[in-house]
Length: 112
Length: 110
Image (cartoon, rainbow over all chains, first blue to last red; front, side, top):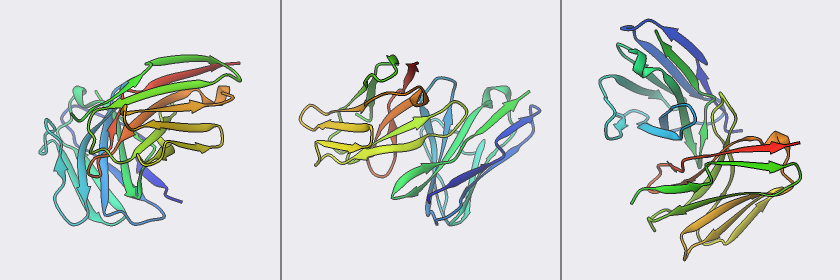
C-alpha cells in the first residue's frame, strides 16, 4: 500500500517551454502532497505544500509564478515548470501524506 | 532552528559489518523522526521511524536509537549487505513538514 507515482519519469525540453509533472497517489487519498527538488548528491529541498482544493504554500525563495502547483483531486497534484531554463534542470520528487510521507519515484527534468 | 545535521557524509562498510549514521537536531518541537533510503535515480523510501517518547526501535536489521536529552538519533544497520548501498536521509517533522538531513552515501563492500 501507499504507492505514489509520477509521470513522466524523464523529460527533456527546450528553453522557454513549459513542462507539467503529475503526481498520483494510487491506493489512498491524500489531502496534502509535497513537491521537492533535489540536486545531484544533495538533500531534498521542499518547494511547496499542496493541499487539495486550495492554493499551494510555497517555501521561501521558490517562485510561485514559475512553479505552478495544482491539487485538483485527492489523488492528483501537478507541478508545471513555466518558461523552463537550463537552471531549472533537476530531479523533482513529490510525496503524499498518508500518516507518514510516501514519495514518488521522481522526474528528471533536463532543459536544453 | 529548523535544521537536522547528519553525519558522516559518506560511509564505507564491509559486508557483515555495522553501519552507523548519526543525526542531531535543535528544535524541540520536532515530534517524529523518520529515516529514508534512496537509490540513485529513485525517490526516497521510508525505512523506519521513531517518536521521541521511545528510546529505541528495531525492524529487522535496522535500529533507530533516540537520545531525547542530547537531541540526537542514529540509524544502525546490522549485518550490512551490498544491497544496502544507497543514500540514507534522516528527517524530522515539525508541523507536518519534513526537514531532511544532508544525507549519507553508504557503500557496503563485498
